Image (cartoon, helix red, strand yellow):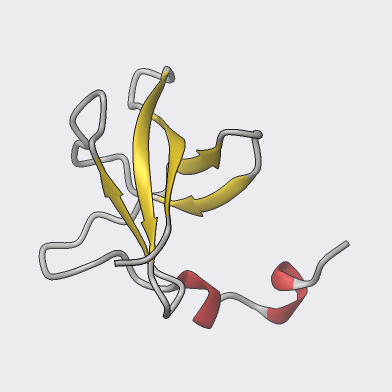
Length: 81
C-alpha cells in the first residue's frame, strides 16, 4: 500500500465530506474511510486534497480500483501551468 492522505469528496447534494486516499505506485487512488457513503451518480465528482488542490475524480467501477485517468487524458490538460 502506498502513501495515505486525508481528502474531501463532493456528495450528490453538493456538500463536502472527508475521506482517506491511498496513493499507489501506478498513480491510482483508492478511497477509504469515507464520512458518508459513495453513491452511484458520484462518478466525476472531484477529490480534493487538504490544501484544496484537485487530486482526482471519483470513478465508480464494479471491478477493481479507480482507473488511472492520467494515462487517458489529453496532453494539454496534463501540462503544468
